[in-house]
View 1 (cartoon, chains in turn brown, blue):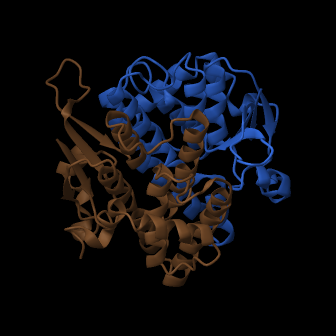
View 2 (cartoon, each protein chain N blue to C red):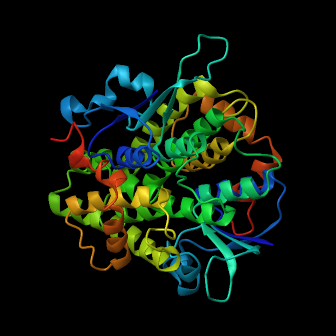
Length: 225
Length: 225
């Protein structure tokens, strides 16, 4: 039995929702409202589950936790890419990483070029810091957002010229697509001009024709509002 | 034949240097000066190699590149965690990820809680943006740095209470140690008080007794200055 704690607009939760759909795995989706009441992710009950106070968190009650010498508990995992690699190893069907050592490495690097370079700079907690702690106005916040998106997407577009087929890496869905599509969804919210990135636009269109992506989209979640 | 493009103070390159040492792999270390002349990582020759214009980049000339229908070239890989997973798969001896599915997932999540949450907010390009584009003074930059370090280390400390032994996850060196030690090196440069994190301090001391970490330390690199 899988449970995923997420939030409709969280890019990281969105990645995991696509993975679950693509692999045909049933999971109970539980909403952690990232804004209401200062953010439900900071409430004590959730913070015990994930001390990082971030979504997503996966609970796999088929697997046992790692506590030694204590009563075992369900397996709890944070960090979207770690969750997706775990699901891909436990449920190999509809693999999200290629079999070949080199191909797999390139896909991981493409995924991390978004997950480690773009998303961390533009997520909710950072934008809140810019507003509250640095008192940036909307123009300066927008410039920040666009700067990191454009830097990241420029490099990603060059990788796509080299590696893409129908999707980010060849003609199969991979972890790289699972990172790109939520980041583009987010970029559209911030009115980023995607015309310099024709391969990104093409691949987003291709992915968003698939049920795995459609069903995982923020606007199709029960907690969207 | 392995070549690693890096820079002595780059935390991401430091992670890969430890991996190479720990696994006993010879690699030619090539320096890309991240500050001189506006940053050598932005020069055309390097940008072709790594369009993200970041270090590290690994070249494995034993392996062939992925270009189809063109002359094959050496395999080039970016993103430190993708590089380390590649090395760990290609050279399994002295594994940096545990064998057990659940243990491996936790180690990846711990590594990513630094690589995706702390380091991206405090690396050179971000601090340069804070100075140049946002005109923050040293106090505001320091507050930014300390905020994200303390948030990340607080969560990491809680993970260590649960999972650590002699090192971050049990008694073997893992990918999590390779992320923690460079981040603590960096935090010390910014005078972060580590006393709230006794497990982090303990594990850093344990790691820094090992040759793999000593030889990879920034001050022991040929390009240190």
